[in-house]
Structure formats: C-alpha cells, structure tokens
Length: 438
Image (cartoon, rainbow, N blue to C red; front, top):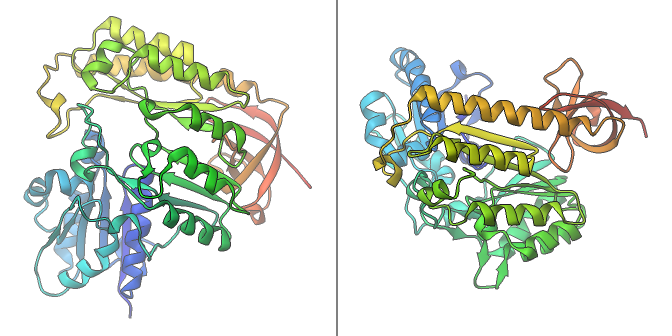
C-alpha cells in the first residue's frame, strides 16, 4: 500500500506553488495524498517567516503534532520553506521530533529527502543554496486548481528592506529563462488552464539578460498565446514600476487590470528607514499614472503600522495616503521584528497596544473605502471566472479580472468557466449577483 502525505501551507502564493511542487515530488516517488492529517505517513509543514504571527502558527501546529509523533514511530514530519532557512536550530530545539528540515528552494527534492529519512532514524537537513537554479523549473507539480496555475518567473530579492527576511531566506534574485516560461505557459494552456499567475518576490524586476527580455516584454509574449484568457502577477515593487508595464496592462486585456503595489508606509521618513527606495511623492506619482490610464486598474497594497520610530505624524501620513489612493483592497499588519534583519536593532518604543490601535484604524478606514467602491458595481454586468464554492449562502464564487470576488447561485458545472453576472448586492469584501444564463 502506497504511503500517504499531507501538506499544510502557510504564507504567500509562492508558498502555495511551492507546496504543489512538493506534492509533485512526493507523488513522483510513489506516494499518495491523504485527505486528512491523521491518515498521513508523512506530514509536511510548508512555512512562512515574513511575520512573527506566521511563525507562531507553525510552532502551535508542531505542538499539536507532538502527540501524534509520540504515538507513531513510522510517522515522518518535515518543516520546509522559509522558517528552517531562518531559524532551523530553534525548530529542532522546540520540536526535536521533526525528521526533515528543508529550505524554500527544495520542493523539487522533498521526495528524495523523505526516502532518505524513511526507516533509518536519521534527521535530514537540506537548506538553500543561492547558486542552485533548479527550483525555478520543476517537472513534477501536482496542480490543485485545474484552470488557474502559478508560474515561477524569479526567486529571491536583491533589495534589502530593513524589515524583510526574504533576501535571507530565499537568497538573491534569480530569473528564469523567458523561453522556458513561455513554454510552460503554452503547455498549461494546452492542458486546459485559462489563467496563469506569474510569481516572484519583486516580479516586475524580472529580466532575462541572455534574451534581453524585461517584464513588460514577457507579458507581451504571454499575451500572444492563444487560449490564455488571464495573466496575473504578484508582487511588483513600486521602484520597478515602469511606463512600459502600464502600457502593456492597458493594451492587452489578457493582462488583468489589477496590480498589487505594496506601499508599507505613507511617510517618506519611515520609507527611508525601511529602505524602500521611493518617497511618498514618487509612490503617489505612480498611482496617478495608473488612475489616469485609459483602462480602469484596481490597486491593492500592503501596509505596516508601528514600524520602529513611527510617530503619530508618520501614521497620519499613511492615513492621508489611503484617502488619496482609495485602494481596492489592502493587507495591513503590525510591525514585528524578524531575526537577522537590520530593523531588529532599531529602538522599538511603540507598545503593542498602540500598534493595535493604529492597525484597527487602518483596517476600519480600508473597510469603509472598499464598501463605497463596491457599492458602485450595483446594476453592472461583469465577467467572472468561477473558481469555487462561496462562503456565503449562495453556491458559487468567482473573480473578476480586477480580482474582486463575486458570489452567486448556479450549478457546479460552471467551475472553470467564464460567465456573466449581474451585481445585485455588496459588502466591503465581496460582491453578490445573479448569473446571466447564456
């Protein structure tokens, strides 16, 4: 009987794709996926360490797995991804029952690591090597979604934001050959996929230096693939946003009219402490270009509150920037110091209570902005790619090209199809409508 695996994913879309690579590697060596954790012979936690909260979730899960590990000598537990790269020894001290530690570029070899660990009682540790290009192209991927697929175009980051662990955990920026990206996309479309998501830590900094292809040019080439209906990308960096990229987003409807542009703070002083590489004024200049484009483009962002040294005036700068930009959505967080980053040495005199107060204000403001923006969709007909079951009382959910979620009633036979929906209701987080039968 084939051994079974269970993968639990923490973190970003890149981690989701990494988990699909891990699953492909495990199935390549003959394993099958377990539907529930307790039925698994191998449990893999694919981790994130960008924020302390994500790390604590992993440790909490390891605490739960301890009892399972004590009762089953044949159970293998692996912790992979960014956490082992950042704090491998700490993981082993707190969870000595862990059998495998592997870095974020090791998804393609997890099957081999499991085979090496299985039955010999040895602990296997395999962490990142910057010069290793193989994680960027992986033959074995078990895709969880039959119509939307992530495609890695680059890995790592050359920027050194003072709060960020990505250069430490994932290394320096390495770009895939553009021809291999096009080939993977063509293969996905031939297998029935209609949407691809280009992934990279600073995805718009992509350059294929051999073929002289930049990110905007890569998008142009992908848009020429027959049958590719939607192209998304995450996450771009404001400093690498170009007029050429905006022109491509306007000219090609296949490129989704939504961009995630992390600002982190509305204060130029704090942006400098974060070493973000742009000022408030430069960021707003980019936003105005996007807002003035011939095509309506939705904008989302990331915001950190309570960064060391953030004064009330700095915080107010973030609030006024939100008022000016009017983000379609925003991910906001309290600053938490991360190991080995420069900011961990900055004096952090802002209390957790004050950080919480500021976060509440940001999230309430964003909720109101989204509520008002979503109200403008009432009565409109929109195209939706149906991608799952709704969390509300209606049956289906899908996304517009601008990434807004639409919930509506309809048969499950619509999964993976593009349909027209008339918007009849809204909340701050989603839209509701009626399926227009064709």
